[in-house]
Length: 68
Image (cartoon, rainbow, N blue to C red):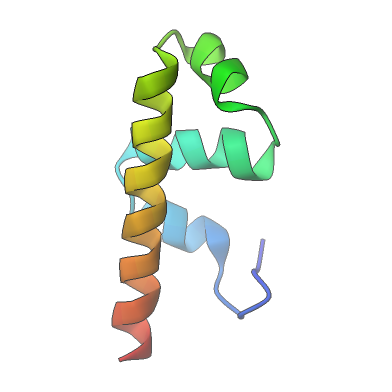
């Protein structure tokens, strides 16, 4: 899958810790809510939110590094 900016999303997600990549896939690609994603894998909603937040920050950092 390629983003509008030309980056391959799967390649970027492979660079994340597995828990963060899974959280982003479920919430941003599959369209699950944080609650639905948390219930699916058996973690709390706050843990899911943290995984998504940290993963998105890391993705931003990866894109910024590549663009430098």
